[in-house]
Amino acid sequence: MSQNSVHPTPLSESDSHTITTRAARTRFAPSPTGFQHIGGYRTALFSWLLARHTGGQFLLRIEDTDTARTVPGAVDAVIEGFKWLGLEIDEGPEVGGPYGPYFQTQRRDLYLNYAEQLIKSGHAYRCFCTPERLQQVRDQQRANGEPPRYDRLCRRLTQGEIATRLKDGMSYVVRLASPTSGKTVVKDILRGEITFDNASLDDAVLLKSNGYPTYHLASVIDDHLMKITHVVRAEEWIPSAPLHVITYTALGWEPPIFAHVPDVLSAQGGKKLSKRFGAIPLLGYRDRGYLPWAIVNYMALLGWSFDDKSNVLSREQLIEAFDLDRVGVAPARYDEERLLWFNGYYIRQLSSEELLERSLPFMERPEAEGGLPDVVARPIDRELATKVLHLEQERMKTLAEAPGMTSFFFVNTLSYEPQTLIAKNMDAERTLNGLKRAHEVLVTLKGWEAPDMEARLRELVAELGLKPVQLFTSLRVAVTGRTVSPPLFETMEVLGRRTSMARIEQAIAALGAHAS
RNA sequence: GCCCCCAUCGUCUAGCGGCCUAGGACAUCACCCUUUCAAGGUGGAGAUCACGGGUUCGAAUCCCGUUGGGGGUACCA
Image (tube, rainbow, N blue to C red):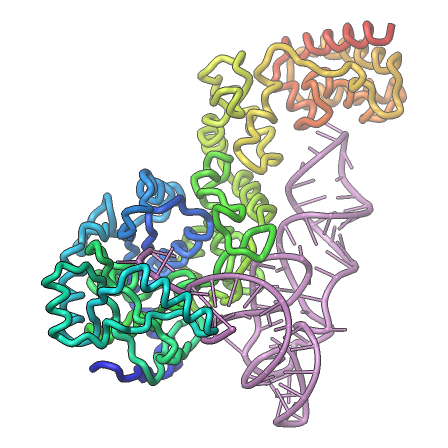
């Protein structure tokens, strides 16, 4: 088997069925050269969902063969990201597994052996060309309007010439001997069959001169050895997919099923989401107060849909419903508004305890990092926080908003413009009077419960011939220091009698001074 | 340049030849609820299904072309 074209069979109905029903082993194989963002995790999510849906396994493999670009901490961050999202990894670094190691740098001998095997079988060859010559060739080709490709100089070397160079200690790479005629078909479960003219293929480097494999070799070998059934990866891999198919075949292996999923585009423009174009690392969302499942739910619907109306999906529902067949092929744009909506929705679903546990870290961080004012003692009173959070729950879009929204419950002194005490269609005098009368009414109250306050204060509103807004606005500002707050009476109840009354008194004083 | 992928409301999408005078969600607007803001409810606006040719009794749905966007073109993944 050498330079023949590959003749695949079309994807039939039954193929497509068995393809998604048998237990799938999938993998996410990032290179630790940076920090993964929503785009990468979305691809990983599809992989994970396929594995879970079919009762298979999801593995994590670190493609760290580009040692120069490896970034410290990137591996830990990826794993941390999966943990945070709640997507378990069945095999990989940390958890191990029967097909390890899961770092490609620890599998060098494997790649070397297979490269050797490919050379022996004539599917690959040593190339002694220098980078300079390669560059020169490409420049020339470009100048001639030809597609830049390796000119296969070393493919024509005789055994003797090769031996001489080896003896001279010349460094070399190993290249794939791509077929030069015929066609190679890549079967993609999402896109059907993609046909490539072999004449347009390049003799890709499989093994670098430093002995490390390139993606093209390493991923093929690992995916096969790790028994990966479905390769779910970004669409940027489509152009090199024929090389992979050829390599599988050359090694005598059956290629896995490919699913090239579309990119996630940046919010601003039609560019692929990336650090350069508006992407933030996944864990950045955790720091910004996002709930992991809100992210997962949002990501799942970026390029995949269940039907014409499903929107909010639980973990169980998602796993049950997910199918590769329903993954779209058109790139989707990242939409922060929609993500925020999901986040707000899931925050509203939280129990009091969960809301507390999730919000506390945000409230307790230093003021400079967005936490409550530093004058508020840590740890924060959990009982108070629970009540307060309950009041703000349906208003929060992110957990990071908690400190800002609730600070007036925790501080001793409020600071606001006395002017804001005066409601629309009110004046200072009537406002002052209203506050004084409200104070009188509240003082006489036996208990300190919202329904009571509301009943008595509404009577007062009627007595003063005012509209509820006219009085309640003043009280709101007096008690919270802001014009926007949770419902007034519940707020006062949580705030407590002493604090509420003191604040109303302060407002009266402030307004008195302001008016005079 | 060459190769490849893609194309339905602003955004995510449903649609896989007749159920479409194109459905849902986010965003947006109005109204209701209402002590503010939210949440919730109701309703509206918003897509000549990129364009042009076919095929067909019939096309958003199939085919071809055009345009537009994206990706690849490394001893990076």
